[in-house]
Length: 205
Image (cartoon, rainbow, N blue to C red; front, side):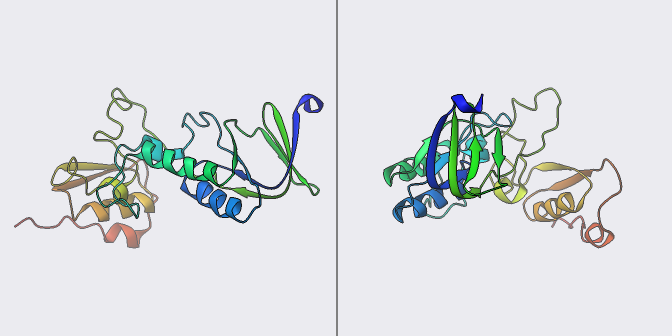
């Protein structure tokens, strides 16, 4: 019951655990707002730290010219948030009440009363369910062409883009510069014609 939960009062509550959440927490903590951050626990089967924790090598984050592992990067972000006084709970928010101020944030064991809430819950990539999809995630299977397309494992290799919308079209176009062949699997015709016309297989010299 809600009455049995531990109740906390704060000026700012942050929901999320990725770079945006921790950047917010660091600034808020340095401003003496004493933020509370719910980083969740295996929400959508992703560990605290967000999608970056599923990435083996991050090469496009400023400050790490040699690259850094996704888990290591998020560990550093978390440590910096803690250093400046952010209170972090490894619990998933189950309910929010924005009907009146202070707002109410509920988790399994806590109720947080807060003046402000910042949602930094990020996104979850849709995965295809087939044999080997988990085994080869980040080892040949990716959800971000811009993030991973230039990695050695993909460069000059035959690649397939699965999807039929505008995002899939854009990913395929980006990969033209790094891949030998790009094959696009479509579930249905739903991409814009202008995007479809931009996909041209380049001639190889």
